[in-house]
Length: 288
Image 1 (cartoon, one colour):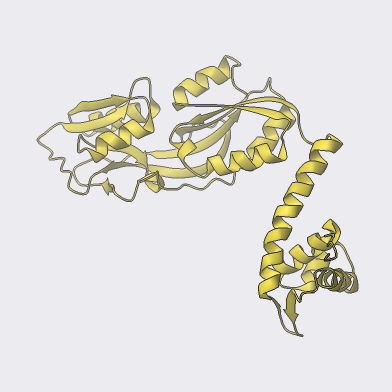
Image 2: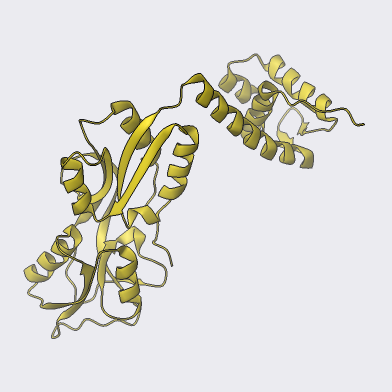
């Protein structure tokens, strides 16, 4: 029977760091180890598996095919190892965290961020509410939510900015909005900040409008626009690839800020941890 291999997490972490940095010197600095110790760890791991994992010379470090495979295994093993240590040492947070997200923001990279957050905090019960920003703000103020991720005016002065973008009119490439006709408007049901912004901009420009679709969800907005029912208001960076920004004959729109707003009555450590995870979200086009 073949000898069983025992993969030491210490050696795997050293190898993973060398593989990521492509440098023994930089890996030693990151890990706080002497460079000979880093070399020894990699050599011991190679001896354990009986394969060469790295090609190295005086100028560069490259992964072999076996090294590429080991790097993938190391990520999985160390992730499970760290999760288990956090769980059983009590360093993982426990309790309940009520998080509210504006529906169009929930269609960004947020699901992946939340999945990683839950994986690292398995004892924390994360309750997610997805709806319009105005509804989320009312629930936050009523102490029904601990943290919300919402759209608001760029100069609102509340919360922590994640990203800033400019609102834009969006519609099918073939859509026309002649000045002598009412603007066909696809929008959220009132009360809605983006709805108010759209109507105020049209009023200021002396344009008439008619609401061709009222909906509570971003999927409803996109479906109506894709059906040719009219134009909607979206952050410029979130306009899907099959729609386009409409600029002709429509007034300019203000900037929008994607913000995290916390409940001062909630657990500060839990809220802060989730905020740190979410603040790396990018502005991405909505699903096509």
